[in-house]
Amino acid sequence: MDVEACLASVEVAVANADAELTTDLGGQHELTSARLWRGQVLVDWEPDAQAGGSLLRPALLRRLIALHAAVEHGDEMLRISAPGRIVAGLSAEHADLVARLGGARRVELRATLRFEGSVYRGGDETYYLVERGQRQALVRVTADVRPRLGQPPEVSPRTSPAPR
Image (cartoon, rainbow, N blue to C red; front, side):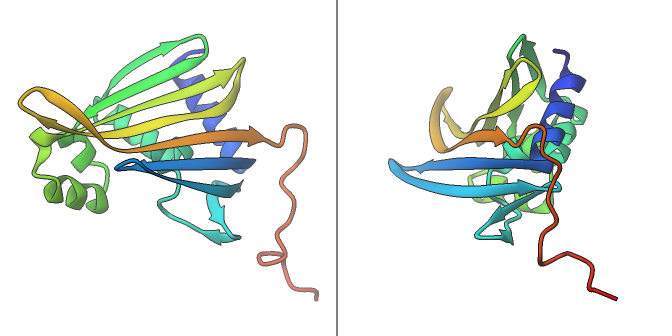
């Protein structure tokens, strides 16, 4: 799969899938179940703008690539690596994170997306602190995505049009 096909597969998955998210922060593990529906990440049926990081947000992945992050792809994987200056360029929230972590020279992002054939299955996203040439993992998010293949996105009772 080429890079564009990988990103298209992520877009298909976030339109209608289930995901298990594991966050590892300083040795503490947190498991969260999410519903991916119409491009949103829903936790307890409420949109969560941060859950899953770039692993569940094709627009962020595209922005990383547009900002010239390093991209490596194989048959069933896409790896994106970005130094702090690129991470800071993603959004105001990312710029704030990079600043709080000590600046662009001290931050690195690595994301690995996994595919089975042309189906997106999730991946790992890790933020590193870089000090004296050594990388130390700060936070790692792992997403296990289970697309609801062959099923059209159902209508949510919260966003269904009201009867007329």
